[in-house]
Amino acid sequence: MQKIPYNWGLINNVLPTDVNLKLAASFPHDDFRFSEGSGYGYWWKNMFVSDEDISLMLKFNDRRWRQRIEEGRFTNNLGSLGLLWRQLIQELQTDSYRAALSEMSGLDLKDCPMGIGFRRYNHGHTHHPHTDEPNKVLTHLFFLNQQWSANWGGCLRILKNSHPESTFQDILPVSRSSVVIVRSDNSWHMVTPLTSPVSEIRLILRVAFFRDVA
Image (cartoon, rainbow, N blue to C red; front, side, top):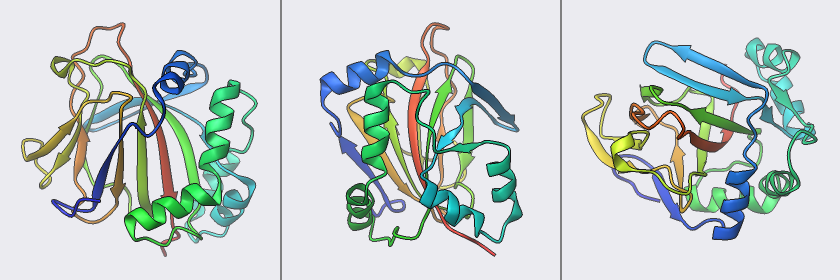
């Protein structure tokens, strides 16, 4: 983990190359919803959450979490995914993965519900500088694109502050890279505007750990 400008880490080659190729080829494209607001836009798919973690979410003081569950935004059903994706998500839901991230980040993630979701960014999409919502503890991003040109935008930009030009490091969304971000009041980051060809889609698997906030 790096301490500047906040706690974050870049992990290289977290998955074997042949696995990355198969995951990218079978990346889901159905049942996505578009999320759009001031300064951001992307496609997202319902998050996969274990029964145990859904039970923890139902105990959150914030009623919006129960509403999200009732709306079907979280699911424990992996049946819509291909075999390799099911195997990966099952591995990510193990205690060993959670323990590894806890050791890496210095955070106790044992009682933090985890949600795993897919993201797609198309030409023209972006995500403005943000620090993530307060109930998010840690995010682990898996990039799935086999190749990506620096001229296409779509970089994960680690920022020194809230200004989009305060670049600390730009990370291409290619499959050899994976990024962990510990949420804090200064964990500023963004996705730079995509100027990629229409045929090129930025593919992400996002793992996030949450906590209850009064």
